[in-house]
Image 1 (tube, rainbow, N blue to C red):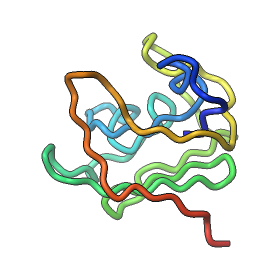
Image 2 (image 1 turned 60 degrees about the vertical axis):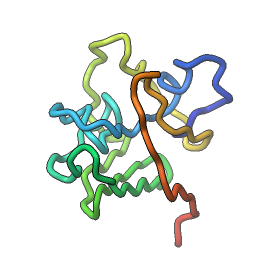
Image 3 (image 1 turned 135 degrees about the horizontal axis):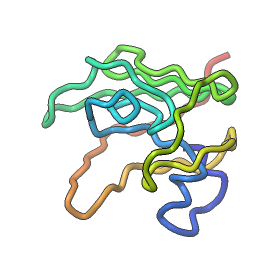
Image 4 (image 1 turned 180 degrees about the vertical axis):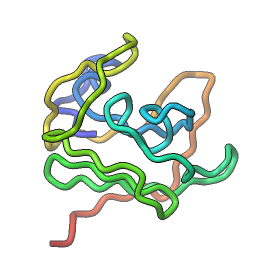
Length: 126
């Protein structure tokens, strides 16, 4: 999300936007609903593999909130967050991100199958 420009290569979005993780892993910075490698997600909200999950992502100025299956699991404010150091080359480069931009859907590898349904966007009601 918030990819600052049209991606020139597959890694542009990783290093210039935010990724909300959809694959569930035990690590709090890489489980479903985390801002990948940047902001942890609470555990226990993801449905088992093979079952649908319902996710709502709210972008409010620079802040990102993620609700998974009715439970808010991530509240990220880049102005106050303690972002862990980058450990792997596959993790995003750290630095400021745009507050607006392109949105993409997960594309991991040719071996993974990911399904989406009812993807919608709407402005915040203020």
